[in-house]
Image: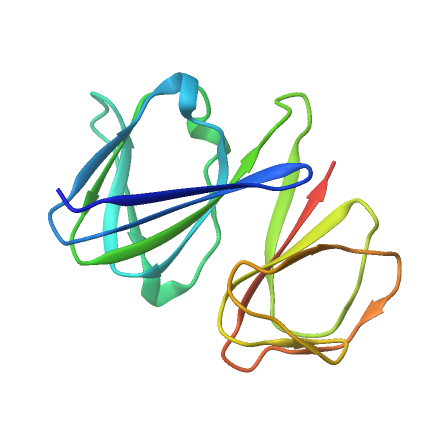
Length: 157
């Protein structure tokens, strides 16, 4: 297997990342499974609970933020169809729920939210972001030039 894993602990959440090759299979044990949302930057594969007959396809072509809340606290398995790069948004406090969404245009911020740049070089309020830049939002307007960027906003509920 060729899996490289990264974890970045931020103020109120963690970001994880897995990078690997076609054919990789990796496991996430129930006690480690804190991933609320995932996005695949490159590649494709499938995820499922252990010993479950159903699975979900996972594909970078859709650039979709996948809600993984239904899998929390269960043993998970991932199989890569192609070389891949995945990011996950993870809780630090299990008593706090989060809503996540991708943004592509200007919006009004919420001071319970965090913005994370997953890819590209988007410009927000005149500041060019890079991969893994993140910031706490304020209750104000944010001008967004998404360009080639992939940006998520995560809000505590």
